[in-house]
Image 1 (cartoon, rainbow, N blue to C red):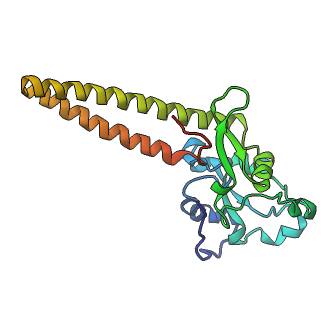
Image 2 (image 1 turned 90 degrees about the vertical axis):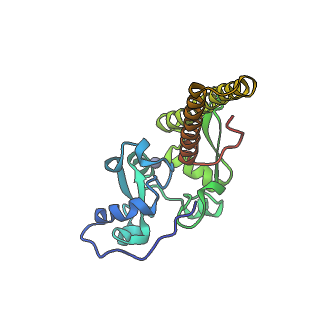
Length: 218
Ligand SMILES: [Zn+2]
């Protein structure tokens, strides 16, 4: 999803003062790995990144420029550092994905790990996707573990849902054949409540995936 930035909430004394404004704007996610801050250690583990790195002389003046400030996790910010494509690289489309100007989903997919087949590996669809994955190390172990864990939790939830549905179906058949007892009606009700809870958690897990899948998650 592309980030649509509102007007400058400043002026501020130092660029870090923009951090609480950037947090909701970037939907509590890192601009680059698109991980939810909860999975990265919370607000304190997040930083204010300079999209055009102000460590480079040509961007020095953008240090407190609102439109140049992005919400990023510490490791993405650290890996990105002062990297910036050369004019020659830019001609070849090698550049950072800019979530404030384009939808990152059009550059990257989650696919299977080339070595072990786990659904956790990022694959680039474009040169910008490849540049961003390489420079920010978006296939680092920390992120592979996070994506693998999301997939595992979703699979567990799907299995729990299937077990619940089978049990509810058996009970409903019993009721049809032998009539309802108070006990059975109560169990059926709690199974259905549980179903709603599991469906909610599956939806929540799916919203945490940073990019679309290349292959069906199931
Ligand atoms: Zn990140």
